[in-house]
Length: 218
Image (cartoon, rainbow, N blue to C red; front, side, top):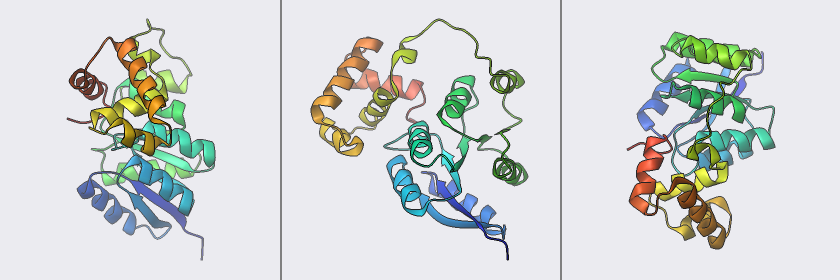
């Protein structure tokens, strides 16, 4: 009997997660070994179970899918990651592949498309949902990124984005420090840098900015 492919699902919406589990259950070649409902939990599950395939939502609490991808690929480059998302903009597509995604599938895809995406990435191919604009897909596959003037968002580092996401979710500096295993002083420094770069100087403005950039969903 052929060895089954170990799969982990990281998705914060339980209903969607249950739907994914039901779809995977009919595949005799796939073995769902774990699941996670936020980014930090996703990292722990991958570290513990070492799956071959990670189905990863890009918009999750505590740690974004992009951050999870970077950490997983740094620690376990052999893990294949299929991003699952509602976002279709070139910003998200390019950031996901830059972070190490092997495929990018839109959440309103049919069961048939999801299975095709899984088979493609497991076969070593890059998958991008056909619903994504052709120009975005071609731009990525041909390795061409359109030049644009740098915005404040472009200057915010990945760690600062992680801090901004947690701030927007209502966590205190102390909680953020614990989540990211950094000092409170470092959190304060990141927060000050974010405010300086965005010219936003209160929690409500930062939260609105995080929502606008898709770090959190209102």
